[in-house]
Image 1 (cartoon, rainbow, N blue to C red):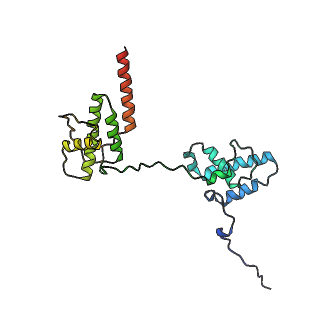
Image 2: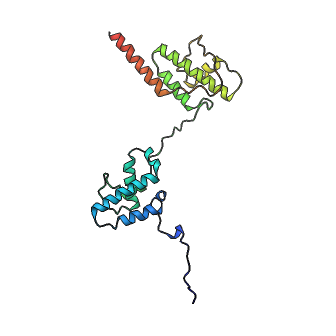
Amino acid sequence: MENNDTCKLLYNTERVMLHIPEYGRNVQKMVDYLKTIEDRQKRNEQARAIIKVMEILNPAVHLQDNYEQKLWDHLFIIADFDLDVDSPYPMPERESLNQRPEPVPIQKKPIRASHYGRNIENMIDLVAQQEDEEQKIGMIRVLAGYMKQQYLIWNKDTVSDETIFQDIEKLSDYRIKVPEGLQIGKVQHDNSNRQPNAQGWQKNHKQKNNQKNRKQHK
């Protein structure tokens, strides 16, 4: 007599949906078994063992701050928030999974000169606010050198220092007046020069101003 039992393939679409698919179905089974352990001490030991397995399966979690708490949060999520263990971190709230992330602030102000970029406009604003005239001239010279390099990336023809200085004055709404006789110097039109850093400038100038003030008080 022939056996009518047939083997049926079980597709993932027919299985219970995983709460965090990245860890796989075996981790889900381990967590489901964890919930059936009655002895609390053994349940805590098994929970810590599962955390170790999850850490091995998801090594990228080490790049995050408080990665151990992330792993415990994932354990509670996989358990569908129905897990009684002695966790070193509080159980996350179910509602937190549906919260939308904070919107990323985007500057909507259009870029006035696309071949320079928005950061250059921020640099120009920083230069315009500089009160020390000597430092201001030095900042203009460095900024103009970088702007000239950026200009030559877009346009391989030569560009005069006067054109760059006119752009600085225009983009600053003429708050900056470039001193006569100021020269940029030779600039290589490649990507070897790095963009000036606004925060670095501001920090250096604050340090110089503090040193200057200390000398005046001596």
